[in-house]
Every structure is written in structure tokens, then in C-alpha cells.
Image (tube, helix red, strand yellow):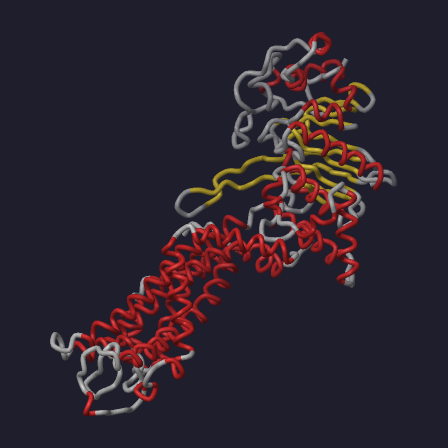
Length: 286
Length: 316
């Protein structure tokens, strides 16, 4: 594609995306949070507060110009720790979906394209795994293998792929009879070419939108897990853990709970709005 | 296959199992193609007409290998390609025209460099009278006629000797149809191609096909050079089909065979009537038609028909 064509197409996409103000808000929120999180050591006021740190002169300080979100029971800056807490959320979402999406997409493609007993095997396995609730599964795995971030992420990924297998399987079943797929077959194209070059690109928009939505889901779930004490171990900051710790000091020291909780909320809203915008642009029906 | 023919189809049969019920057992079969034989000569346009459900598209798909025949043989020289009915869905919406055309080039001429590929794509586009710049476009930005031209270019890319045209114009505007047909015929002469033209459009057949075969419920009921078929239709089904062509002029009206239109719908290929499959709708059905399926008989050189009306003549 020529550069001018590319720019025109981009402008079209942007026009459709920007029709909805929430989409723009979602994009700005998501991009800002990701950037700030990557640059956390440089943009936060007290990066040393992210780890082991105590300052007993400054415990339980309410929000002020020095500590925007106040301080906690050992005097650490809640704003700094919230930003660092996003790291855990994003790593969690990235790893879980980084494993689950490719796995589910490939299994969905294979089962949808080949059909027969391969399809039955993969889809019945999907049904079985789908019956396990992710939160319960993560708790169970943590109980057996020990509460460890890696274990929790693997537990979630081992469940999450099913949604993608189902989504892609459904699309492939209808796309494999399209005439352009038959045309490629007549020309003698390989099965790999047909699956990954002819069919997969037509599933990509739906996969992208679902991945964005699921990022919000995983973050929500990981906050829930760390609230329950599964996930990262203190003093590493996780937003869920901070909410749980702060809850012990409610209602007097409300900022310890409210601000980390709001931080989770903002990111989830941002991702959902972004997903809505992408859905409009890419014309996806989920 | 003797030396001249490009395609020989012999007693081709395709049944599709019908599955249903809880265990998805096969409890019947659709006899989509039921013992069809014909041959195609070089540079010939072989027309296949029939109502939907007559099995004509199934034959096209069998020829290019999308379906495997239940029995019977297909023998051909060189490569076989296909142009589909709906240009909207026969091009991948996410691949540019150039990418779509590169695939058959890569597969059939291994070892082409990028530059050579681009050059061949440009040549193919010129051949179907499109601007080579279109290589960068996505199908979305092309009109129906332009898409069909790309589909034709894609079929040509692997240097076939034979192309199956499955209703190549029925999804297009009338004004565009004529141009596409003209292109198809010019390419045939230029590149020494043979075509199997599948269509329900009798006017198109009359103008384009050299030989026309009429299909009814999976069987060829009449086959003749097109001029002969239209001048002397022998099978009652062909006669009613021809009578159903809308006419626009008095001269055409005078030429039109006077037969009343066929009643009812084509029977389900799941339950093909006993005897002659057309007897349920035939205006001239006789007692024998309900019992015995007629064979194809030669009534004139090159003119064959499967009907008991002519069988009697053959016996006497």
C-alpha cells in the first residue's frame, strides 16, 4: 500500500473512532497509564516507596500537595505505590493474554478448519475447561503449588484460552466455506497458508477487540486475587493488596482504600471504552 | 481421452449424505450429480444450464477438485481453474489485489523474484483491462465488475487450459455483464482456453456457448450444439425452459416455441421421482415415464436427448 493510501485509511479509521468521545477518553487513559507505568521510577515522586521502606514520622497522612493520595501505615506514598501497582496489573494481563490468546486462536483455527474428530476433541476440551470458574481455579492452583505470581498467571492462562478457541472456531467454520478460501484451495495453497493467511486475518479484528476487553477482565480478576492474598507478596505493591490493607483502617483513613480502588476502576473503564472504539472502527460483532 | 479433447467426464456421480438426528447418522443421500458424461474440445465453450438444484454447480466443483466424486472419472489436460459466481466473496477482503494475484504465481512459477512477481501482476491486470495500479487496492474499493476481472486474472495466473465459469455474470449489473462476457471470450481466443460455462441464463448460453447441455435433477437430459438446441429443442423440459425466456421483440415472439410454462417447483434431489425424473412436471408424460428412466439417445448427429418420446422413434 502506498503511503498516501495508508494515511487516508488511517484518517478514516480515526474519524470513525473519534465519533464517540468515550473511545477517545479510553485511548488517552490507556496510553497514559501504560506510559506512566513503564516510566514509573522516573515520574513518581517517591520511587523508593515501592519497596521496603518505612518513615514513621509520616504515617496515615491524608491527601496533600506532598502526598496526593496520602500515605499508608508505614508512611509510604500511596500515589507512588498505585502507579507501581499498575505494573503488576499490566504484567498480569500481558502474560495471561500473551499465553491464552495465541493458544486459543491456534486451537480454534485448527478445530474449525479441519473439523471431524479434531474439532470434537478440541471443542469438548474447551467445554470442560470453560466449566471451571477462573477465580476458583486460580485459588486452587495457588493452594496446591503455592501462592506465587507465576502460578497464578499460568492458572488463568490455562482457562482463558477457551474463549478464544470458541470465538475463532465459530468464525472459521463460517469462513472456511467462503469462495476465496475455495479459490486458494483450487490453486493448491497449503493448509497452513489458508489457515493463517486467508482465514486468520479475517478473524483478527474480533480477536483484537476481545483481547482489549479481556485485558480489563484479567486486571479486575488479578485485583480480586491480590485482595484475597494471592498474587504478589508484600512489599511489592499491587492495587488489590493495597485495597485489602487499607480496608483495615476504614473509615478513618479512607484514602488508603479509595485511591487504589479508583486506580483499578479508571484503568478498567479506559480499556472498556477503548475496546468499544475499536469495535466501531473495525466493525466487529462480538 | 483421444488426442483432441481437453476434458472428458465419464459417468460422473456425486451423492451427498444427509445427516440428522441425535447421532448424526446418514439417513439418506442427495443425488446431486447422477451419471453425467460429456467431452469438451479445445477452445470450446461448453454450457451447462438448469434450474438451481439441478447439480450444475456441483459438476463445476467436482471438476476443480473441491468435491471428490462418488464414482466416475474426470480426465483433463493442463491446469483447471475456476471463476466464482459472487465476486464479492471470491476475493479475500483483507488481501490486496496484488497479494491475491501473487499467490497462484508463487505456487505455479516457483522462484520468481519480487520484481518479476510485480511485473506479472501488472501484466495480468492489463490482460483483464484493469489499471496495474489496482494491485495496491483492497477488494472493498472495487466495483463488482472490477472484482470479477480480478477473479478472472487470478484464474489466468496459473496458465490454465480450462476454466470453470460458475455463473460468472449473474451477480453483476446487466451493463457490466456484457463487458465481462466480451473479455472472457477475447481471452479464450487469445490464450486458447476452453470453458465450462455454468448458468441458468438461457440468453447468455445462446450467445456464448458452442455446445449446451441441459440438466435436470443431476442428469443431462439434452445435449446439442447451441444453435441446434435452440432451434429444435427435443426434450419437453428444454422446450418449456426455452418458452420461459422473456422476449422483447415481435420477431423473437414468433420464434418462441409455444409451450405452457412448467408447473411447480423442481422436486427435492432427496426424493427424485421414479422413472423419468421429469415426469411429475412433464406436459407430455406417458405411462412408461413413471417406470423407466430414459437413456440419452442420439436423434441427430451431435444431438442427444433422454426422453421416451424420442425413444419410440429410435426403436422403430
